[in-house]
Image (cartoon, rainbow, N blue to C red; front, side):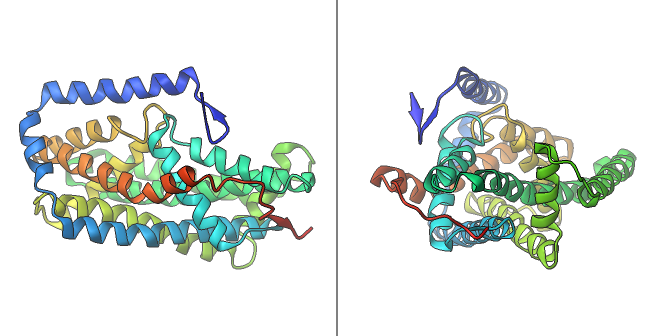
Length: 313
């Protein structure tokens, strides 16, 4: 079985089972009825706000991809980038693994400009670096959030200093001149070009910060949608650490591990674990709804032999 040209692997099936297993374990631990009651209260107004915000999120993400590709000498029309990003997000939501959509996005990008084989490397690296740009900002926001949590004051500064040191070391590594022509050497040179050359760093930082902000706001909207009025000063620092668990490639779209992290975080901060899980599930529903245009792209068969990438080299 394949999705968008990519086969479903045994590892992806295992990840699906992990998601289901974690959700079942949470259902046995918590009162499912209370969680269901919360979800039944989802207010259409907040759902609408969330879907509107998702348009901003996809547009910013697609622009970041287009900019990153442009820095590597590959032209990518914004309209195509938006369409492909919707499809990638949808695949990431419904196919185990979390990166299947991005793999397919890179594969289709290369296939669409098959006459320009020399550009295939930059095309793939553009997808990787675009993801890296967003994840680095997400990790930094997560570190700041953890340091703000009073329950973690005994260890956060140590972990925060270690993490910031790692970021600093990573920055030095990015800008360090790699002269060899190996695959790794080409990757680091493209990374410097896409992320640090000229205006690249402030533009990457701004676009990734905007995208991460939409994640955090969507999570807050999920809480409000099911009637949970926890103050923002308490709620917001909890969001990024929970969302960071979705980067672990062990489940499908973060389901299970995200809810488990929310249950633990809410519990250790003196809040109700049921509320944490309910908000997390509501967030997952909102995200899935926001990616449905990508399902439409897949259903309509928009993945054709379109030459929508042209190298400038």
